[in-house]
Picture 1 (cartoon, helix red, strand yellow):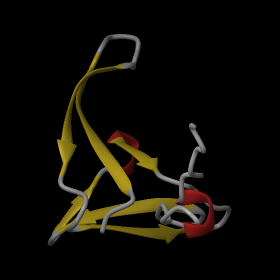
Picture 2 (tube, rainbow, N blue to C red):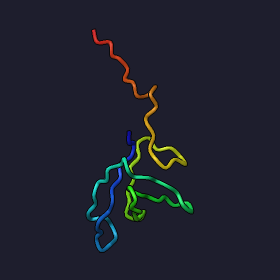
Picture 3 (cartoon, rainbow, N blue to C red):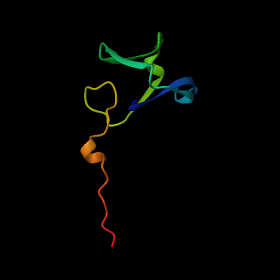
Length: 82
């Protein structure tokens, strides 16, 4: 199960802000780290990390990928409605 979403910027406005992007399938995306910077690969294709936006669920310090929510907090309390 994937706990990240990945957007790949395909074009930018003149000021550098993203104007278009595509949503990537998170399953084949591999996140690495080199010299303190995240690296991205999808299958055999290296992706430009300057054009990647990674949205992680439940991000943790020093973790490259999102993590599942803690199960003890994921349960909803039952309501006594009488």
